[in-house]
Length: 114
Length: 111
Image 1 (cartoon, rainbow over the protein chains, first blue to last red):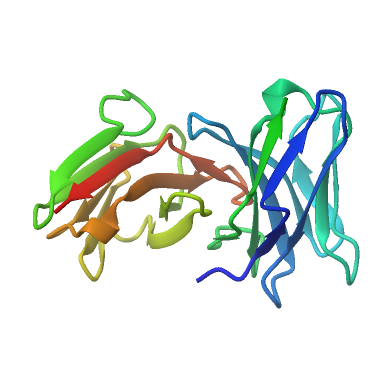
Image 2 (cartoon, helix red, strand yellow; image 1 turned 180 degrees about the vertical axis):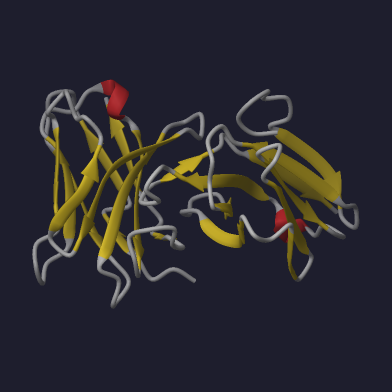
């Protein structure tokens, strides 16, 4: 069973508000991924880190998304100005290595933007 | 099936029956991951099959991989109610760092 912790489990925001969610990866896993899963079960990779460094990220052209994985603190994903289309399940996963590895997922943060 | 021709996204069966779901992928991959996702939870890996394996088994689960046709299948033998979940296949994007998920097959097993 995955030991990835995500908080909060549910988040409700109004349009234009900031939304911040956190993730604690499994102990000993240096690689962290963020995915967005919409109501149609479509997954979208957002960003991944190895230790504190970004490995790759999608072109967050909206620039409303930001993420970090500081040393000795939970990783976080923040949406600066929430929009209705951001309503989704945000999943954090961790793994031992960056490439071709099993990813262990947390339960997700369900974001609803009213 | 997932990706390609999306024909079957939901399956309803009774306990004891066998079920197979298919997945096709568009780009070369060295690994196909099969995940299940229970309601209210994140995906959990159930089988990982590599390009040098044609078949892999885990308990009542059996995955196959055909790299020539870029397709994979997952079979559940003698399904039980607790097998009710959404099943996803996923491949590694080029470079192997992020997963590309199919759209999932919802399996409902009734007593």
